[in-house]
Image (cartoon, rainbow, N blue to C red; front, side, top):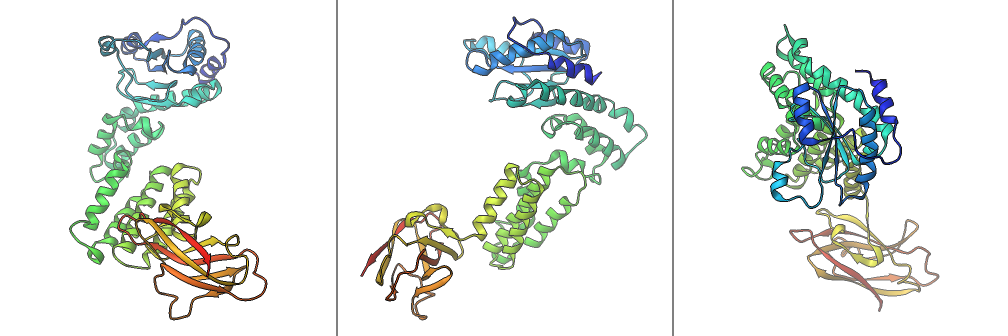
Length: 413
């Protein structure tokens, strides 16, 4: 296979032309099996997706000019097909709700070589860059049996694992036959590839909870240390991809959170934050990376009450700094009554004070500061009211579901 010829074919795109190069998927599957060639299938939705018609014409022109050893096909989810007609259709081995997109499928129509998402499908240059590499990786996977001859144990598993590594993870997971060869060659998973290609985050949490004995034991009696060690042992594997490392570090944060929250171990909170930071650093731009950033902010930054409103999202289990700008409510010296109006759920506040530029302007008597306050008075001394006046206090959710909400009311006495 010449990737340069393949890339050149993909660059030949222009205006819409009548379909000529894309076979109906039913026909393409039979042809692929007979000729033992991968299928490059455009998944379109003519009649209900505006982007499909243009992309279909572009791909058809490329297919009609291609001399590559692949079968070009169109799977078109057209409007108006009867249920009977749909039952007779052969579908690609994938579920898609975001068309147009494309797949490269094995000749038996059972497994994936790669998935080309909606955005890349529309850019021929990007498609051209991906497909030759993926098809070459598939060739390597096909030849893995030959390469693994004479090898056993983790060495044989590594041959198959590295061959799978050439495919996108989503596609590699569909090659169950190869994963089973890894499992048989390396039942103790010394290579790490069994875990890598059996990986599912829900199963990770299932195992973590099992080790922790969550449900069977309560409080400090849970095996937090064992659960943490189980995760660190998995993280030691050199074959994991970035997303898997992120997920395992997030699971470490989960264990630390359980230890902090239910085990009442204060030292677990820094461990939780560190695990989130490690996961975020692996790929800050990924969805997991962004989520970790939000969690770090949630557990470390003060809660800012906007317009004196207290929202569900402001609730924390532990006492957390709360800050509100009150410069519009307090403009002159005097005593002010601050009332916590609770519209639903529950929340508590304590140690309220007025500040400006980091300096305390007013606070409660020492005997009252650490007590929960639903209503309190703060006195601004005579003279010019400092600029940027803020109400600072500590707050937390008090309801089981952390669903407290309401607002702060400030009135001159």
